Image 1 (cartoon, rainbow over the protein chains, first blue to last red):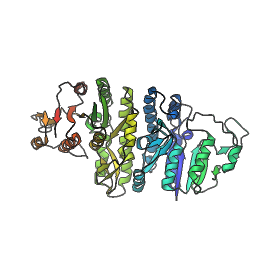
Image 2 (image 1 turned 120 degrees about the vertical axis):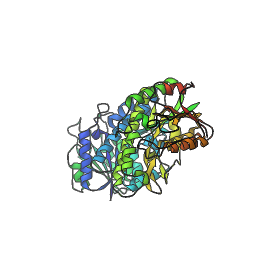
Image 3 (image 1 turned 30 degrees about the vertical axis):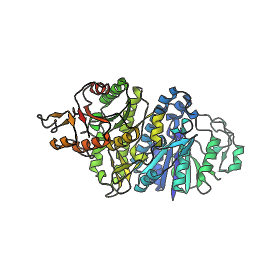
Image 4 (image 1 turned 180 degrees about the horizontal axis):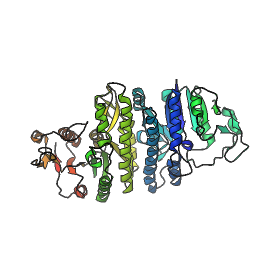
Length: 257
Length: 257
């Protein structure tokens, strides 16, 4: 039994302030994961360590002019810093882990992450060191560089390790009929399939170069691949992730292809 | 014209104190490299961020028992922290760079680093972001894990990029007939070839799981590969690295195969 978990950028960072790490929340979530006793693999988002500067320099468009190159290096540096802070919290709770930066290990082709060889990731997992991937700037065959989202990293790991459950941890209770931060009458959708996407108002309130909530749901369905159970859960509520991992009934959205 | 530079662990860290980064020295060396105006590629050692804990848990032997696994993750974490600090200094002086951790990207086979595919490294260099490798713990096909030295990373980069010059920056003026820190009568050898190795007393005074000075010289000769000029220079003396890079005559040891 393996559970693939994405710690979203909205929960491990303050998405509205450049490079602000939510250390306490991340430490608590890592503790909840360890306490659950489940076998897990973890990916995290880039949050304000990635999206702000990436957006400012339009890195998602690929090479436009060479003034972007220092920004590529700076964003790569910033998200690696975030990743080390996440890994440090995992190590502290007894989960040996190592940061595996997509931009240092892989390339993309027109925005699609290419993992020609997964031997390193497999061997790390085999010796008991969890490979932790994250959103990153990655060299791209077609446009010189581009953004690899944490969700793309999820897809790669799901293909390699075939998780039984895929959990997306963010700062909302699940998927709503509209953005609950701006629409108080928004309703939580407990179960989603492809068709329920039409009900969703997909405007988002925060900076995100990797796409909207709708894009994320479509990505989630792709990641599930028809076999894994796919869940969206609020990581800002203490205990909820742990309860979910233990198999208890919690407030969340379950996504089915 | 490309120069491959190794910033040794003895110069960027205090090798006798766990995780002490020599920030000022590293910042100065990065400034000297940038001021020289030369095209460079940089590797760094692990120093006290790697060797102490690696030695304590005998990580160079590979898997002996599972109590080593948390230490594998901790050393990987520590050397990644060091690498980010080195990269930060490079970015500060206008050299876009990204940390490329061998243990996240590659595997070894019985202690030998295997780079099946160098597309990521080539593409990063192509867009103008210098891939910075370093000493790391790496998954190993034969013994589960092992130590990859900065010198092994040098060998890989030398093969890919065929540097005109290879420079090893450490805390001594070059190769001596004995360890100059403990033997005041030790003489600097200005030129070394394979035969002069016999003259060298190779006892070392500091912790290093990756081998002795003699091993390093043999490794250097291997890296030169017969074509590149190979130099050992003291990075603790301000200005010396920059003068060497500019092609001036400085106190150093030149190694010829």
